[in-house]
Length: 631
Image 1 (tube, rainbow, N blue to C red):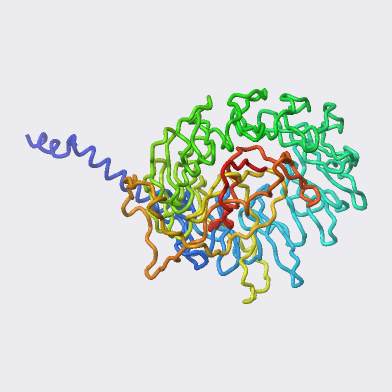
Image 2: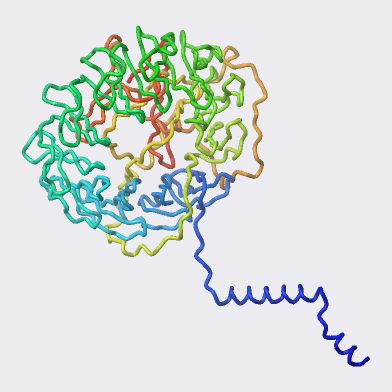
């Protein structure tokens, strides 16, 4: 009995096994935590947007789509994040580069920082006493790879060579270490293409040719204008002023020459004009006419199978064979929204919505109606008689009554900036408030990867002179490429329906990271005749989702028009003069060819610089009825 009693005391019970295993697991976890170093915290990723409680006052930060501060508002301005998770930020008038934790990767010790990364490098600049600039390169860890010693540095090509200008104003090509791979013996160069050829003009000469990576001419200089290769084709202009196509051996492609030749779209078609002030058609990459020149104006297909075209002063839509699918009957049109199969169209000065058969889905009784996103990114935006913007679905039903004081445009995550009065928030595609208005200025939501914390950037710390107090202008930062469209207008003023997207591929001029505020006219009080009958707007603010302004913050009486729009409307042309197609122009001013672009015929949707605090250009004048689009 005693033996059985003792063995019974030490016999494990079923519940003890689980309790002992749990204690052992807990002890092992504590030992692991104490002995093994913790991994470095990673910066936040996902869709992020720059938001400013007050611009130029150290109150700009970064939020996620839940309204949480990812980067606390402690900067004067912040640019858009690049795909590597880094963004240019300005503090005390000096630009640097931060990650999504708000840590300095490149400390603010330079006078200029470019927003565009190329081959893992970013251009940084220092100002000289006489007003000139010297540029160098820094990498993603903040190390200064190339000391500021060049007057200009272009983007790197596929062969990791970049055009550069020395202090004697001669061009050559450098590698990522800043060493001359092609000596500076040229008056001008353009980037290398994938086939290893780059347009160049030798010093003392006037004609363009194409050089290889050794600096030797693979295609001898013979052209007044030469454009970078697009695949196995390049556009050139000869001494007779006409454009043609050549292959990588310098041989002419096709027998046709053109007064103007646009850019080829993804389907291999480009608008072309046979004779100056003549008619337009469509050509393929072999230089052959797919659609004979019989149109006053032709735009590109913009990813779809219908393109706007004009004949006898009216717009319709053609297919890729140049045949009319929707006969010309409209004074102006916008692109077809692929997901909805609808296109805004204007008739007798009023806008409505047509389907792919040209039938009215929404009657033309709106002041302006445009797409509010690309692809499946948004509904329709409506500019109403009360000088406000609203949202409408593809069947003409109101999603949000016209109460917004700025034009919405939806990002890929389905959210758009939206302004009520002087403050910005974010709405979804159904007009519901996701983040309540609490910001003086915001940028669009963009996908940003998670990145590790900043590394030591001590190598990128030159000792420039401290900024002088008299430097009132903010540092300049080159604009990055656009990826969206905006149509912001001053409240109370109708936008110009004939503004066009310009896709002339000129070298973008440097623009300021911060656009100074411009006074805007007070919005006139709506009259009984102009106010739409009141309906309950679909506003469902998410309480507590948006951060609140700081104590004592006083918003401006009327903010500047916000938006990412090009500076001003296009140049007007005589009524009977056929517009010119877009050209892939050289960087030199003498090589810019104006003309229509490859987009819709209604509204200029070119996204401007993705600067954090973007203010729009001076609003264009109100559009007269039946205004046809300009190139």
